[in-house]
Image (tube, rainbow, N blue to C red):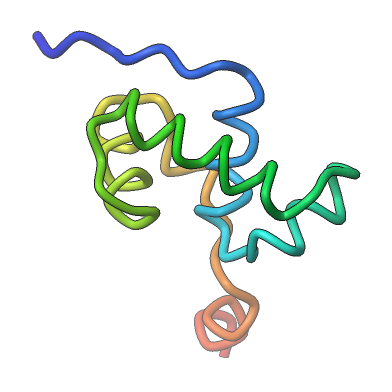
Length: 84
């Protein structure tokens, strides 16, 4: 069994916001911090997950159960298409 990397609460929160398509600037605005702070948190999360970038970090977090598929929102355009 693969060891589950431990992210801090903030790292998981920021990675989850990024996984849902938010930019660093948008995440920073919502959390009341700077974009640089968001970038630093993401880089620390990448290191803990052994990931090279945002996409790989999300994929690894999903694979290891750090994030759940239910945490990822379906974009509105796809929800409308499914409803049609």
